[in-house]
Length: 187
Ligand SMILES: [Fe+2]
Ligand SMILES: [Fe+2]
Image (cartoon, rainbow, N blue to C red; front, side, top):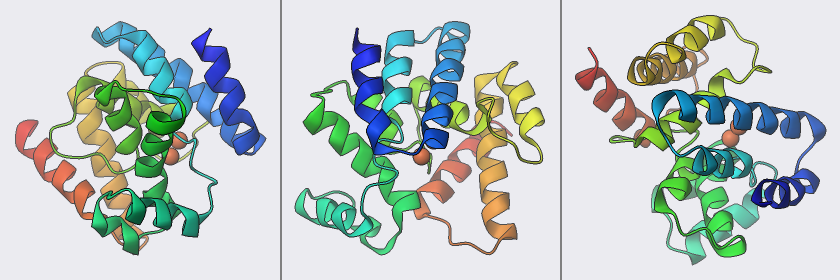
């Protein structure tokens, strides 16, 4: 089964806590896929692989970005931003995943982007609301995910941007593009 193959591939690459998070994202993504009429196998694969590069060496990731012509803006960012695009690259080259929607869901799971597909939104939201996540406001995000995918996406990106501003952290430009896109569509 693909699920077991991918789970055993990610397990040695991350601490137990991140593996448990990944299982939570997988279960949440599958239930959102069923609820909102998306392919649940695609959601499962994207969810299992979304953090595959989370603990990869930062210098190695920068090298990957350079060698493989990924977005040049990435070179100035840390692993928090790098692990999405590099994870998509691993999914493509190591696991031969060709479904661009799955790859984009992994690629943009941390930052979001303008014009996200349904699967991309499902992975982005599942990553934030899976049952092991504990932060102020998570219950509100879970409630919106149970009601409407686009409203939930708006609530999630607004939460992320607000958090980054409040903690005086830099915001990757692609996240700003996501925020502008979402608030213009779902005012
Ligand atoms: Fe991640
Ligand atoms: Fe994650």
